[in-house]
Image (cartoon, rainbow, N blue to C red; front, side, top):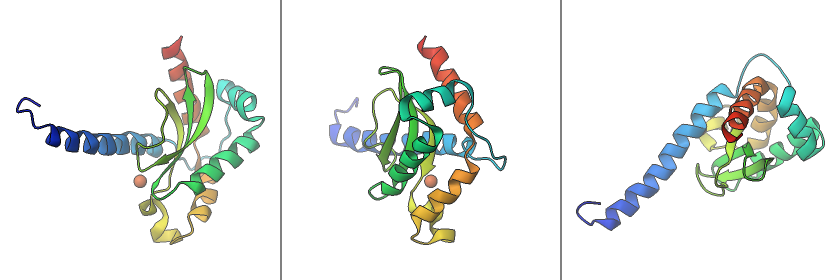
Length: 151
Ligand SMILES: [Fe+2]
């Protein structure tokens, strides 16, 4: 920036957006999975029921959008403070098609590296199996933290 090399600034800004977003989503992903089966409770369950009708209906949406990401990316359930709603996004790569301010609660890595070794090109099978390992307690903690920050 100091030398006025805006071509370089543009290049590195895009790289930072991609790689920092990758780091953030992967850091969340590792805590979003568990070997202890659980369902959402508390505020998270109430908001899921308010915004999607039921936990099962929300899972249908999250599953569909995770499987439907165009190319590499993420399915994402997040809390959006400005609209006070839960939202599901299809994030392309790590940073495209997001919404300003959204707080990720549950993320589904559908980059090919996440599933290819075991599932080959069957992304849908990977997503279906991943639902057995989702840590909804962790998602609920993330929502509680977001709600405290936005009050
Ligand atoms: Fe990944």
